[in-house]
Length: 263
Image 1 (tube, rainbow, N blue to C red):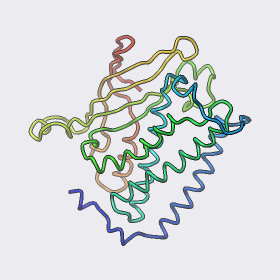
Image 2 (image 1 turned 180 degrees about the vertical axis):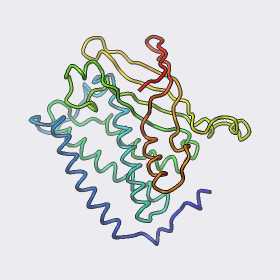
Image 3 (image 1 turned 60 degrees about the vertical axis):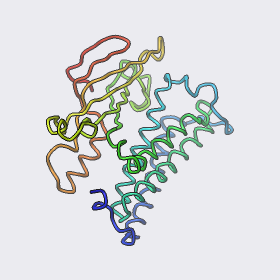
């Protein structure tokens, strides 16, 4: 089945590769402007490493963010390289490398920030996220995992503590969803709905006073399992599936809370 989806790499469209390159350079410039406004504006120093705060800031919850955004970028790049004619393995390889170019630029710029500094922990999670699409190709069982993120404005964000919601880890929820159908034997899998996954989530709260972790378990939606097979719908479903939409979950730590729909 996998072989049927592989595109002959001799049919690579160089014009499309040039378009990808031009868009990438533009996106990097725009991204720098946004990040400079959110994190780096007026904050410069000589290059240095971040040894003391690497795992203390936001209780380490930023590490999933580094993983996720590298994973997201690698997925998007992989799709564009597929559009340019690269085969399944190569598009994931070059997608991951392209994502790492952006993430490396960001981490090096952090190294020149008084507040942040270069973080080996952040960079390690960047590399893992960028490599994940290729790892999922090489190790098919990893395709049972879906990495997602969601946002819901926290009290801290509503009080103006952060200039952007993506910079507020109390507003951020990290999810790892498991496609049960990819793990069940064929017969039981026939009776389990394709569009329902199991999920584990994490967030942090009270970062300014009494920092604590939150953990969740519950259900998630597999958007790609919904009807529709035209190329545009498949593209939309694949990318929407990188976000966690409201679903029934239970907070299991530090206390028990049932949510009919958790954003």
